Length: 352
Ligand code: SAH
Image (cartoon, rainbow, N blue to C red; front, side, top):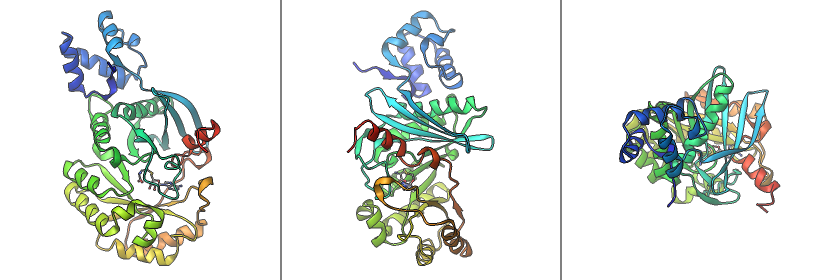
């Protein structure tokens, strides 16, 4: 029988599990405290638990589902990128970003991705499998250890690593509920951002959950013709379906939707594109986040120069659309978009 992954259990589920072993509820409190406050890596460290209980936990459950296989640190920005090995030998990456005195964790939701966006490294090898909720929690826990080591705490979590979160809906939603638990990591729903390439049924389903999490939609083009070339998903869910779903999300949750727009030189970065984008978002209380493309060797696409980025942003701002240009925290350590995992797979001859 496969062992239960402890970090995939909610507090209530853990209490129920140990109740079936004849143990009292306060033991669940103790275990959760060890796991999420003290961030211990083994049951042996849970010294206030009876020895038999530690043995039982050891026998029936797994505490750690990830080990850090590689660590990269950027002294310039304080960004840490971790490559995690999973129990089945697969690998995913997570990134810790520093903002003055608090941290944000960017985590992966799948091993690889099957969405096929032309500019993205995560999708180059296709999808290997979905991540389980416990594995995603472990990404956050490992990054929280890094944050503590640097004297801070993770305040927000973004699902912007490898994978399409809405293509792994149930596990991702479970993960979100798990990290939001006050007895656990206590990361409030408002501090969790889910980024999607635009799977409309998933957006609508998420809207109905009524959670105040931030939805970030990867737009990258102001019209269907161009978006289809960059993002195959647009063939299934064109803008005429995507934008109403975003509107529904904003209405149901009261949260402003963020649109991500990766600027690619000579492809989607002209002032004409900017004006078209203004038209598309007319009447929308949206926020646009411009990301100068992180070049991916395999993709032959380039980022525009900074002047062009500012000019694009200026068109949006002049029309009253709140616009930011993504601060770059990881380009020097391949922390962008599936690039570390891809690099390692290449180095190890696992990709051709
Ligand atoms: N699958 C989800 C989340 C993962 S990617 C999504 O598509 O939103 C997080 C963001 O990085 C997305 O907006 C994605 O389109 C963008 N991205 C991917 N590759 C990039 C690259 N090379 N340069 C800049 N942004 C990129």
